[in-house]
Image 1 (cartoon, helix red, strand yellow):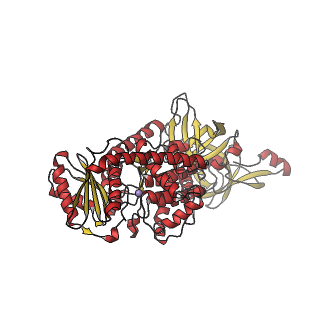
Image 2: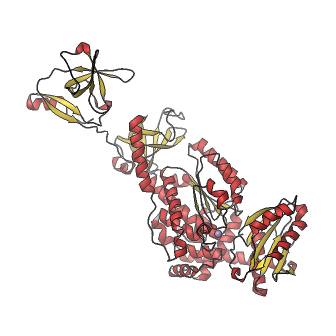
Image 3: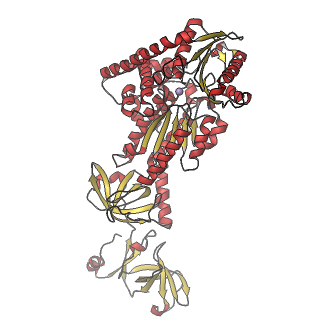
Length: 634
Ligand code: MN
């Protein structure tokens, strides 16, 4: 409450002062032994009801009143008592002449954007609780307001939860002092209370409006002029807004991405853009590390193993660190029916899911489980718009300052997935301007593949960032590192193929396609680079070079087969569902792209499944238009 003291004002003119509360004043603004102007709003047998402001009302008891009163009359009163139930009693003050002095509700709040300027001084702050972490010392409430998020440390007793009634999503008022703690600003709490009723609603609305505006993605000019891509932009904007909003709300983000070149070109830029935005939003310098995790997925879909682990980590983080459950961001993965069991697992919890993918989608199977979905097939485009290309734009919408570090990435993504998009020329040119010729880009792609293989389930954050040369200055070092990895990878591919090629079996199919088969279990090294999928792909590429289209290559192990085809109109997801029926007890499952995919079956039924598979391939139409248009990832 702000007002000059009555004494001071009284001295000036010799008369008395009566205070007039502004409409938004609350009971907190009413002080004892102070006269206020009130208006009568009701007359009853036992007294009159008076209003001092919109929310401050009370009763003046008949026993202390003299004369008659009508609704609308003014009356000068002062506080008599506040009852336990919050009811207020006033009594009249005898005044003839007085001067009115208005009182404004001046609970001035300091936003999280002005904390550094107020270090060491007590401030008030209103916001939403987004995380409650109990440490061995104080309880840390992470509070989000319109401007950002700040940790507020409240101390009860070492390791004892302070303000136990306050929970995540409560709107609270914090009174405390901003202080530096390990380089970050934190508020040392003096008092903390939950806002109730209208106050809470108002604060919630104010914060909601501000966050909604702040979540708006940035408008960025496309890196290249590509009309087909622009069809995806509105959907990408939705994902960008969802992700920015998620950061502002302090919800953690878990990124799952296909562990190949395109997948990493997609996931790493988005990860870095989000980390930088998190750093802007959160006072806590450790927030980027705690709030975003990127993990590769070996399969081209979200496996139950990954989903249950992710869920388990999320629940542990909630338990241990008082975090909200995360948002799951699936990149270069996640559009197909094979993802459904994993999504359904997560659907039991509050875990929003967003997908950016370019694998042939099953929208009817997944859409209802997703909060946002970007896929070129949903706009009559195809895999040639790779996920890496999409996600570079997505990263720029989240954090535009990252643009200069990403100009070469779409070209790497396109080469990794062998995109035959017309726009590849533009992307290659864009990369060339940054000093990346096609050989160097190809090296980056191979190096990513090689590193991903050895990293296995590890995200390899710094190494992958170094290979992608994002946020990294030393050009010479990058060239050396990348060509070392790429050369190592190529040597190991050569070794693998030297052993395998003599064991490739050839067959001419009735439809005119060449069929090549290789037993990758017995005639290739196991558990070494390249994995069966890539081994099959490399054999396939060499056979196309040798013979020309159409070519189908099958690499099989005891209980799986990897398929690659060029110039043949296959529909692998369709073939898989037919085989499920035609080979009872075959345990057939799988899928992937239309012409590149993998199939699983039970060991004892291998002959039968592969024979049935070959029969289907023989029936497939030859399609010159498809020639060399197959996506590469496996
Ligand atoms: Mn891809």
